[in-house]
Image (cartoon, rainbow, N blue to C red):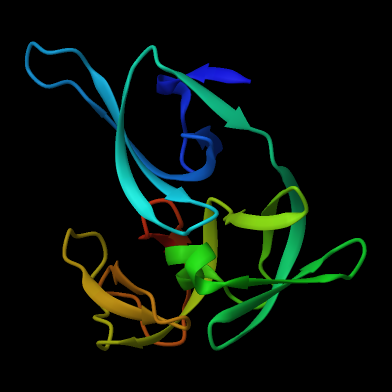
Length: 186
């Protein structure tokens, strides 16, 4: 199924140059009085190579439909991440290279969608937000309420997020997975 390049979204699987690619990031560019184009960061599913490609707005893109199965993240063992199908209780193992930066948001028992193409797991789709526990940060300031001042906080997975000064160690916070930013207390 062909779609115009303007409808490409991160997380989509497309067929480009006779290979399957996972779309990592999209940027619409309009340089001065030149024609607009879409700059996409793509990852080749077969080789794992990442590169940037430019598409003109009307260029047809072959979108590949993948099967998304709801799974629960169980644990990681070094470079391997284990997921379990909620219906059949079958386990699937994905490598760190396949998951990329998404591993920073994976906490035990998190429900996500794993994308399969021809019976092979090709990626995951994270929920819009996740709840995590702050493991390391500077002590909170009691009088600090609403201000633009932030401080770094380390989460249970190693992810570092800028948080307001009133957040303390041990608190649960909600993080936006698209931006990697603090949303609210959980």
